[in-house]
Image (cartoon, rainbow, N blue to C red; front, side, top):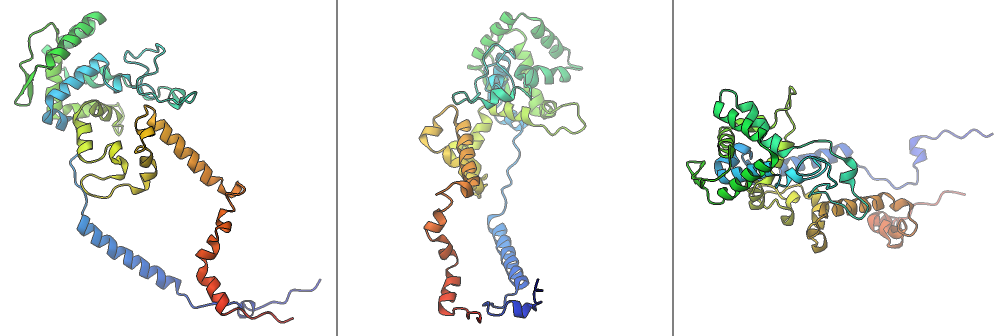
Length: 335
């Protein structure tokens, strides 16, 4: 077998058109330009500095909305109380065949149900009774009210809650405290709700809601669900153009650019067929899953994978290279 002749680099590339190119210089220039642009934009646009939304700020800004929402948590009429998987089964926390009011299905597809309840949330216990039980130490009136409420029959509690919810429709707010609730048969609920509002206004409830028993408490799912059940938090989101109908995820607080790479998901929420559907989230996930799979499989789908060649995209992308070859064709190798 003939031994292949060893060629130098110059001999190997002889006849191949080349041009000098300093990659390090190009990278340095690009990084320098990007740095200048970022600094200029950071000065012009600054950064949004919105204060955090907490249960304390909610209770101070809209105390009546806070008490109404907390009452709804006890009644099981809020979104999180009857959300369904992954938080609960139904408003009573029992598997009665009702998978919950926020479970989204599409025909036989029910991924929420399949995943099951893996982060249990009992709204009444998590947002009202549990935190107040911890805060009732040294508060005999509150402790007695909690004992009376827990020991009452379910029908009695429902009667109290119905009466108290009706009374709140005519309540007035004075000095950030819900007062002048018309007299009615609502048992210990007024004592319980006034104590909950007091703890919320002081900031204690924010800490009690994330108490997990771990050294670090980093799971804020509970407080976020509680905030979302009221009108205060969604109102702030709508004012900042963060609602789904306002291209929410692609916006930032104020007039600042947001996560523009998420427009592919938010786009589908603007289509009437999807925006009005009760299972819009599931529909968007399935649409994006199908399109992503299609993109991955493009190299394997006959016809679709040949579209760039049929449309002449390679010659369009490499047009300078082909123009150079046409003007200065490489020399033919000797025979």
